[in-house]
Length: 59
Image 1 (tube, rainbow, N blue to C red):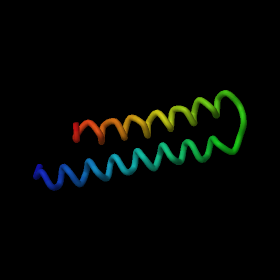
Image 2 (image 1 turned 180 degrees about the vertical axis):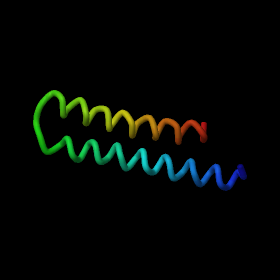
Image 3 (image 1 turned 90 degrees about the vertical axis):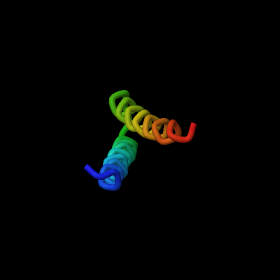
Image 4 (image 1 turned 180 degrees about the horizontal axis):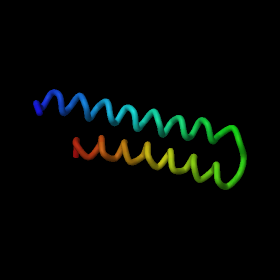
């Protein structure tokens, strides 16, 4: 696989994961309860993991 194709697929996958994490946080925000809090925390943890993976390249 060419490097440019691999990079494009990686960017697309990371964008989809970020969108899914944001969607988890937004949909769980409308209701109250421990279960929904855990869903929001999982979404935020996913966003932090993406941010850490992004920043690891520039270290």
